[in-house]
Length: 119
Image 1 (tube, rainbow, N blue to C red):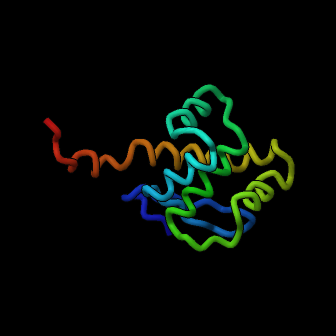
Image 2: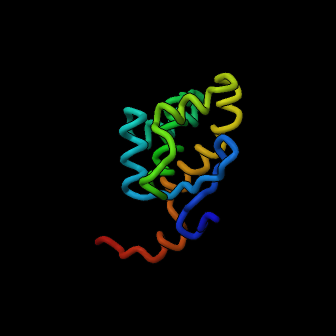
């Protein structure tokens, strides 16, 4: 079960629940797979122009943040997402991808409040 205190999120993919965890590994994996920075991906969401590749990158990166041993590659995850058509891929996976990205960008309020002040 996901630990929401540290920004984890559970997502169901092909009938199996996976944990997404925001970590340095996850965030750099997302940027690498999407071919753009996190803020650019966030802008895609805000403009309603998110790509399937970015959705897959967010989910894959989040899973890599939780575990380095995944049962599929990035491309195989992409195939799972579009298995029933791109429209279903957007419908089924854009919301958890957006939730995870938002948590990764903002972090938990507790962490922000405890962070040392830089002067």
